[in-house]
Length: 492
Image 1 (cartoon, rainbow, N blue to C red):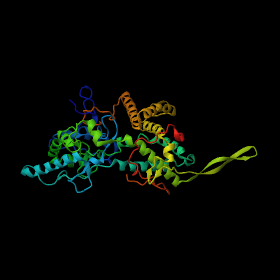
Image 2: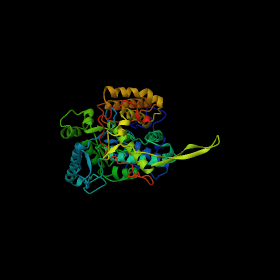
Image 3: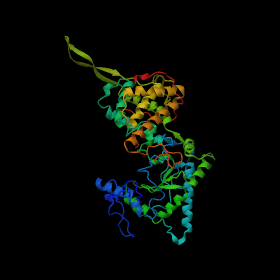
Image 4: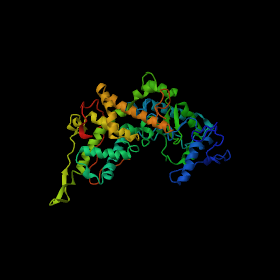
């Protein structure tokens, strides 16, 4: 039976193996067919070698793909999406420093760090007691030293937002500055900008977390033990997977509930269904509470969508004020020039843009004129529009007008959080229906509560001659309810 997930099954009598893989893995047993892909090889060879690594190269190992997980192709949303489909990120109060490292500032989730350190100690003791049966000298794997751990998704999002601001103001608005006289005009142009970049470069915090641009290490359950290039298949196969101690490394990892990343084998991730992980999570973070995936993610992680609108309000006001500071005046042809009764041209008129009074002591002021004018109702509408575009939906103003009253009513009857959650769930359901209808059921799926996985650039943003967009550092606490305005303020 063909265990390959990507080629035609053995049940097809006309096709048993991908033609590109014919002739691979035919070397004598003492030789290995080493994949040669890296980002520098020609595209045709790169495709073939990547295919070989994904589907055949690891079959040459004694344990094949046992104890491995494929984040590149299948499970990249592991611990970034909860069982209901919401984007999540770890609570920093549950982080702990690794000790098996030369860097004192590498962190992971508390229970994961404890299990990983047990794993390292076990490997060290075993190698010391193995005698002459195993080489005790250093290899590509041993001694195990943590070099990369948890990444703050807040910091990554801040850098991402700065990049978007720079592209928007320097590139997209290059010939459109005269269109913008106030914040409403600015938002109108920003929406047009998001129609172009939305699916590839999301602006909402939750969509950013679920994008492939964000490293796995934001989940707090992933660690790397060497520094090496991710694209170099020759190195990862020849120097790591063929290391004389790799099978022992794999065996010890499986014993301790650690999964090896198939494509980056020096990366280890927590197996959340393993007894050692479950036991340690109950002792150190859940404190004996029921261990279910729903309870695990609800306790140790935050839902990102509950910060989406707060961050949007903060950043867009900051974007606009930085833009006004960079370009406070603009001229536009508005006054007709006449010769008798005939209009012979136009005369430019200078306009002065005014910044939004939205911040106090560097933080968004929820009592400001900006917060009052652009109320929760405004931002629910804006959020529904932006999230739709990020998921690849083309949505018209009339469609928004038809659908948004539902979310307004949920907000009035229940609360702001319920309205935001409903928007996210409705759009996710719509996305899944489209995926199924097109014959492709992607990894953006809601998972059963008993499944293992919750889901299958430091750049300055200073415009030329201008100022940087304000830091997102102050925008870390979402509004608990915001304004209770009842109108569609702001003209959007």
